[in-house]
View 1: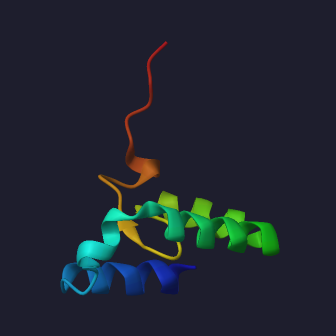
View 2 (view 1 turned 90 degrees about the vertical axis):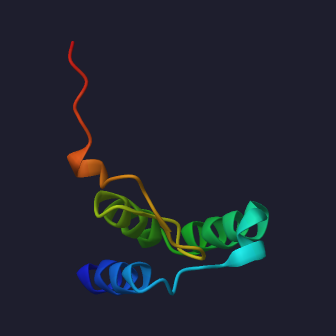
View 3 (view 1 turned 60 degrees about the vertical axis):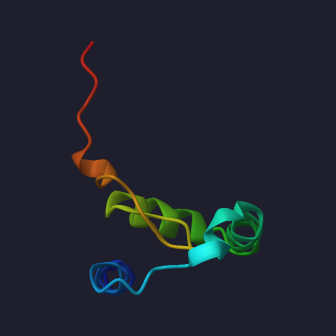
Length: 76
């Protein structure tokens, strides 16, 4: 898992994650991610781990604003 997040981080920092016009159509990427989750239940855990490290998606990696483990906790 750390390897996947590390590779995604390197690609993002070097500007290699640029899907251009393809990035505007969410449906194919959402379907591929859903297929992966439905095919192998472990993929759900993989997605959770990627979110903790600041990444969303499998078919199209997207950098989140900040990793979920660093998000401020709600008070109350």
